[in-house]
Image 1 (cartoon, rainbow, N blue to C red):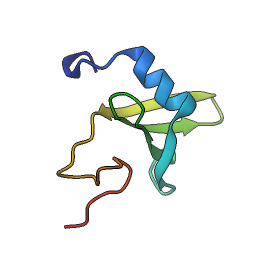
Image 2: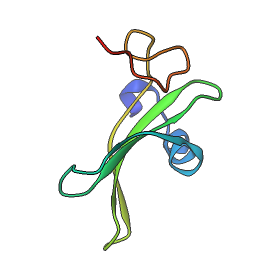
Image 3: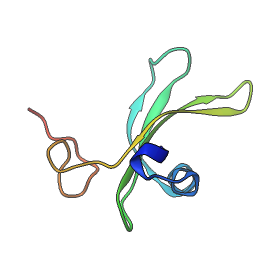
Length: 79
């Protein structure tokens, strides 16, 4: 995160207020989701939820770009 100039506060904001734009129910060992927030600088977070241990595992965090996502930063561009 720090290498990409993304703060913990930004990630927490996505986890609390972001929209789930893709859900990966079959991911192992826990289902995961791609969350997005577009206010300010758009940010994507892929996270998995461990319900039993009440933990959220952050898998990756990145700023989406228009080569992979539509201008809404929520719709993946199909190639």
